Amino acid sequence: MNGNNFRLPARRFATVAAATALAAGPVALAGAGSAHATDDQGRASAVALRTGLDVSLLDKSANVPLAVSLNEVQAPQSAEKTALTAQLDGVDGGQPFNVLRADVASAKAMVTDTKSEGRTNLAHAQLHVPGLPLLSLIELEGVTSKATCEAGKTPSATSNLHGAVTVLGKKVTVTTGGTTDVQVPGVGEVRLDLSKTETTSRTAAATALELTVSVNPLKLNVAEVTGTVTLAKATCEAPAVKTAPSEEPAVEPQGGPVDEEGLAETGGNSLTPYLAGGAVVLLAAGGGAVALARRGKG
Image 1 (spheres, rainbow, N blue to C red):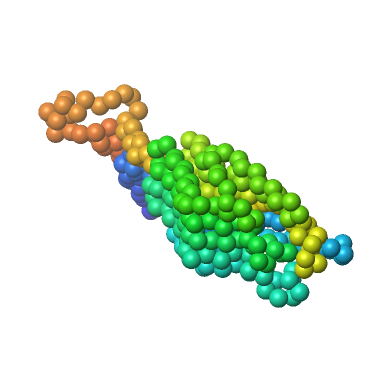
Image 2: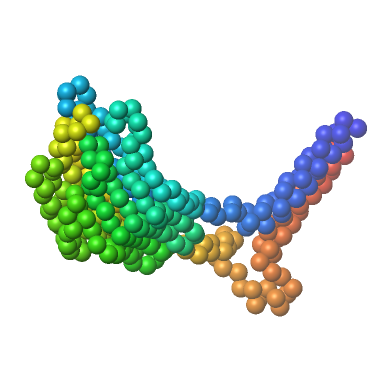
């Protein structure tokens, strides 16, 4: 009885081992699923106005940074702004100071799975700096900038000037892609860079106007205003090109490829090696069990 009680678990163990061997083959073929990497997302930005000016007070009590932006947007998520004025506090006797006024001032950034784009538009705009409340630093009828980046394609950047440009009260002729210097005695100097564009294999940037400013208006307790002003800038970065997921090669049983046609003649398939292996394990387990039984009877 004790011998039978020990042999019964042995037979069960052999059976379970055989079943496990049979199941292991198909499960191994399933394998781990291929990992899916996330493609790089596109980016875009646009801004109607951005200033980086330093305002030096006449009594040298302080240098006040004049940092203003109007309708600045960034994406991956699409965005748009259309405010028409930008104000600065603290430099005009404590009263709000209007840096920019425009009839149209829009900036838009858009990103999809295959394309990113930034664009901006300014129309009938007047830009002022502290110390020159009645004289515009620059007046323009219209400027636009656009940067477009599509996955797998060459990015593009364009800027256009529409109509006349007036700097410190003087009408000027500007050259696309060139530099124009304007000097007004007793007031200051402005350098204009028109239609600056840059592109790489995946990025683009367009700036309609970039001004380098140095003015000395001895009013409103302002001694000097220096720095840069950017009007109508757009940038983009293309999304990464999406590639089709590669198919993993089929895993073949050890011992070389299986001839499916030969197996078909006997009713077999590619699982036959696993079935055969399981049968061997079962046969060995059964033989061991019989031997143990005979030895117990002896």
